[in-house]
Length: 241
Image: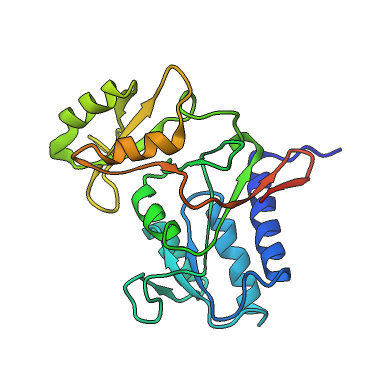
């Protein structure tokens, strides 16, 4: 039996999710779709484009979460809008994205690609949320393994780190790759990556972190429960509704 690589699982999860949603009528012509960021979200964009190209879907309007996704949609002839555009009206029919961790209650950690603020704006303003992931993203609890990203105002770095330490977190400023200094988000902010020694309650911690002055947003996603498609090494896809 062929064992799927992590990248093959990502593609399988994305294609299965889009195919299933089109078949069930949950992706339909004319709808407003939020498009996520990252290595799992890109196959979603590509699969939606396939349905547009063959005429199954028409009039799809995308609202994207990063420059990466905007470029991909434009290259594949998917029209890109913002939540502010009158044709979107501040609300999306559906958002589709990947995740860095998914717990048994379908809470998420997102933001490994530093797009968490735009992802949360898009996905918390969507009537439905779909997450696609490979098997490594399913975890029993959160806080101790994949670092939670927290987007901050640069001038507030020290007091924010102190406040996060009081919440039990160990914080590291995310440094750029092939760039001197910190990662700068699409919004001009910095990222702190946070881990805990013990598992945390994602829903409670999401609110506590957002209450810290100088925090723009954090990578716990707990308030819009998704349908999750998780591809496995054996080629099966688990659907958590």
